[in-house]
Amino acid sequence: MSDGGIMVLDGNTLRSLHVSLPEDRVTLTGAQVLDFAESEASQSLFGISLPPHLKSSALRRINIDGVDDDTSFRRTELSREEASRKLSDYLSAIADELKDNPLVVSILDGNTLRMFLEDEDDFAMIAENLFTDLDTEDKGKISKSEIRNAVVHMGVEMGVPPLEEFPLLNDILKKHEEEEGELGQSQFAELLQPILQELADALAKKHVAFIHKIKIVNGSEIRKVLADEKKLNDVIAKALHGKHENDQKSTEIIRDFLEKNGKELGLPPSEANEAVILLYDAVFTDIDSGKDVSLDEDESRKLVREILENFAEQLEANPVYCDLDG
Image (tube, rainbow, N blue to C red; front, side, top):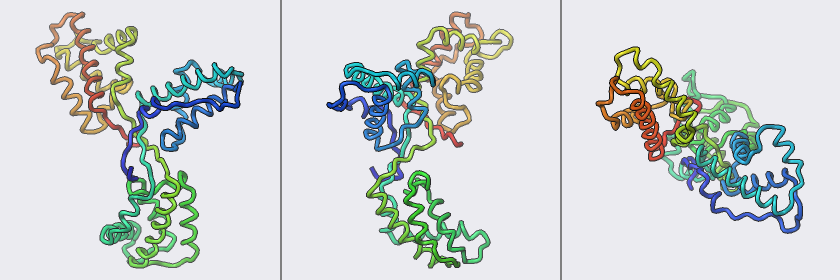
């Protein structure tokens, strides 16, 4: 895949993964099993480093919850049969967690940078825009040291990995920062070009998988609420609280509750983006407009369940992407 594009990791590749423990091991510790599973999962997922929250959530799925459980299991000696079973369980748990909470990644392999470099007009426009952004005093000159800010400013969307994700970028930049001075726009472009070419070549040899701070809301958390009668009853009670104290329609009362508290149930924040507004409109348009304050308690409870099921179906068909930095 060309870098800069978005890829969703939902665990499917892990489900088709066939992994066996090293043949020369009769017994293994829990730590060795977990490390082996995480290494295999990482290789299957474009070499990403599994985020801590993904690992801890997956461990909870196989009943390893908290520091004490984790420490105890890691020290445990397992037979080959026990280790194989735990390996399979952990990989399945990681896949299940990714199904519920997919990761959004970009694979940076230099392709996007090479496309810019091969098109003179594209490169000239990029260089001009970067120079203009850095020339805050409109002098027509910038310090040579600003080349670092220019490259970093390009960002993942333009194929440049963050410095902390790709330390080699720092080495490339240092080679071109040895001399001080100022640069005009044409000089800036002349210096930028070999830096980007060297970076593209380096990424071609060693790809970078960048995890975006994006949450995909796909209805999985709502389905967990629907499957837990106690949680569902609690949500219904809160959603219908005060129903008889005003003359709003039942659908209006429920929508108001979900817009204020939906995030706790696995709904995207109502203020996130236009897609969320359209989602709410789609769900409540599908609900019978005749369902108003005259509904009795049982009918109101069924209405809340119907609305939550509708949300789950809509989000499964059309997941909503929420920027966690937004």
